[in-house]
Image 1: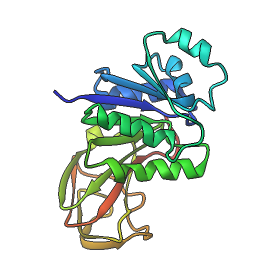
Image 2: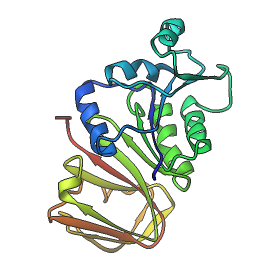
Image 3: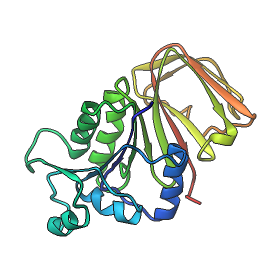
Amino acid sequence: MMRQALVVLNGHFQDYMVLKRGLNRVFKDIEPEVILGVDGGAAHLKALQLSPTHILGDFDSIEDCESLKGHYPDSEWLVYPKEKDYTDSELALETIAEMGCDRVVVVGAFGGRLDHMIGTLFLLNRYHRLFEMILIDEQNQVTLLEGPIKQLIHRSEVPHKYVSFIPISDDAKGINLKGFKYPLVNAQVQMGETIGISNEIEEKSAEITFDSGKLLMVFSDDKFL
């Protein structure tokens, strides 16, 4: 049985109902075993109608910790000092790894400080061999693919209109895209090139294969619906 986790960071949300629908989709309406509120992210849990199993952080972005403790009396609190070597996001994923989770969905990674957002995106690379990791908000879903790989994508299951493939290694080689609006055949894409941005799936199902390298697979919409 796959052990799933939800990590809620202190990002920016505009519509909790849209985000809730996205969570129901990725979890297939099965509540995760671990729900981890990270610092100010714990405040989002009430709006999402979720009760955390754990609350973690240095709590520099929570105004009233005592009130939050009273609201979630059964949650385990993992408290860290404000001056530390790692972000709360990385500490949360270390905790998830220690719990032996197979799949983690992270919300609240986008918006706010750009340095934290970039750092959290690159945590996909740090942890992808330990567990499957998905970052979502109302209009984006991000995962990491590492070659060699063959991935089938059914159009009926894609969360958003656009799909982009963005290299985060020196280069990604032998890329083939079938069933997409803009196909590729045995392509090589270097980090920093934008040829993989804003593609679309046109067939009933599409396929990506590539021989080596790492790509962020980003599903997105111009605005959330």
